[in-house]
Amino acid sequence: MMGQMHRLGNEVLSVDIAIVGAGLVGLSAAVALHQAGFSVLLVDSRDPTQTDDALSVSWDTRIYAISPKNAQWLNRLGVWPLLNTARTGEIQVMEIFADDIQAPLTLSASDENAENLAYVVEAKALMQALLKQVETLAIRTLFNSPCETVSATPTKATLRFANKKTVESALLLAADGSQSWLRQQLNMPMQQKSYEQTAIVANFNIEKSHANTARQWFTQEAGGGSSILAWLPLPDNTISIVWSAPTKLAESLLKLSEDTFTRQVMLAGATALGGLKLISPAVGFPLTLQKTSTPVQDCVVLVGDAAHQIHPMAGQGVNLGFRDVIDLITVLKDKNQYQALNDGALLKRYTRLRKTDLLNMLLLTDGLFQLFGSHHELIKTVRNWGWSATKQRAIKRRLVANAISL
Image (cartoon, rainbow, N blue to C red; front, side, top):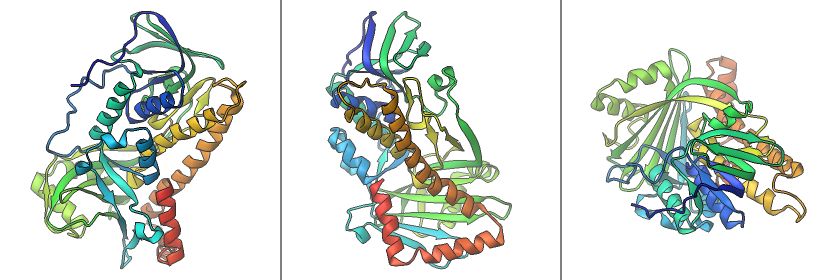
């Protein structure tokens, strides 16, 4: 059990930056902004230190592929060394398969003389490491405290709580998830589109070594739509899977017995790793694309899932959230001494940076989803031609370089 974190009394507190939401992005923002010299308060309606999310022998079904660049950032924050390396996987090679295409597209970190393409980390482990660093740095927290009202102007945000506590800040970060309470209270616009897919996540022991290789299969379903099955390598001959399938198919898969579901996963992955043994119950969640053209309103900044949700095929959701924080800190640290943290020009620069990054990621994820989900013969022909073109060494190296630079 963690020690008692620094709590607030009943006073009105003024800070540089208040952060609502103590998930992975909110916690990392608190650590990074504190280390950058800003006064920070981290707020959450629940207490993330009082959960039953203790790491057990079995693997967490919530798994993230962390890019090397973001792993380096977490290392600079002092968070990465707190992870148990025995429970951290590495992706050194990625094999991508598609219907009607004989050989997979293979991307290797060695093509760019890199150690790996990504690290595979359990959500619980990363959460606990971030919480420990928040405690070590004595960052102020207000946990188990639901917000009652919020108001914002271009120069100040005010949070009020049911217990009469009040927090004022120059910047307010909404890191409270895809259903962000803050975003809704402030009527910040958000565009949504259902992928009409459900993602199934589960973990398996495997018969053959995965050799630190991630595998992904794009499959067109006979009844329409497409499925994307990803196998991510974990230590000790273990993999985590994400099977994004049309919702009707996903619902039928989730109703199968463990043995039958396991056989379906093996067949969908062409028994590439031999026999599989399910070691965690399969869980499904619906997939939705969410994006906004206005991540900033007055002095409020949306970050993480509060700002965007993308298809999990590239494992970039949390990476995108971390880059929200990195770009915000870059902008704030570059300000001149006369500029306020909520200066309009600074926040416009941040918006431009994030718009470019999000657009690139949407082109990758949503673009691939549309491309492989189409049954149109002309689109299939163009897709297959493009697949062959990517096997040219120069293009493959470019794809690898892009992957490790995220």
